[in-house]
Image 1 (tube, helix red, strand yellow):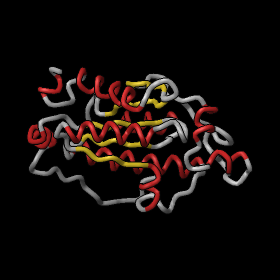
Image 2 (cartoon, rainbow, N blue to C red; image 1 turned 90 degrees about the vertical axis):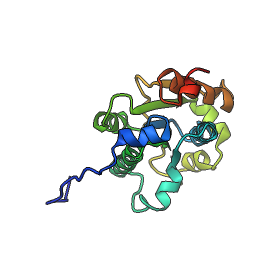
Image 3 (cartoon, rainbow, N blue to C red; image 1 turned 45 degrees about the horizontal axis):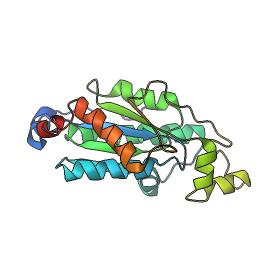
Image 4 (cartoon, one colour; image 1 turned 30 degrees about the horizontal axis):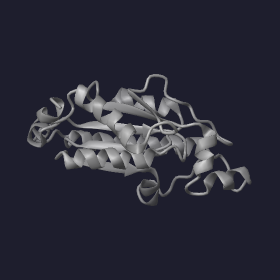
Length: 207
């Protein structure tokens, strides 16, 4: 529940449209969602690297990194997971207003939490959901952080995919199966969507 009172939103002199014109591309949230070990962070980093190399103003918000600071007070209960995603959504919206392409790599297991961010953004198309699909058994085989092994041993309660649910997107803008695609192939799928949607520089859109 909102606790702030007597606060008024102040519009800045510089508009989002002016910032985007200055940057030469549209601002947007690219929201990578999927199970732990599906390759969200790896893919998000690959896409950001390509966008940055093309001269785009970008920033990557990664789940573990954000929990070191901004969301360090949150656990992994359903309520805390929802608050975690709410805060990230608000931060991401500020980046979009700054004219940035902000990439987020979070499990974000609840469909309603992701859809709530989509509903509260300023413009249609600002929220690009990328479902990083990967079978659970493949994620477990990868287990880059050793989390699945701990979850199976009962050392990590409420672990997504094992003892807590993951609700896959029903209509994601981009779906990539990282058990079948290389990182670069998956990154190209995202880039193709951005070029086709007119998010990037004119020169990129003509490639």
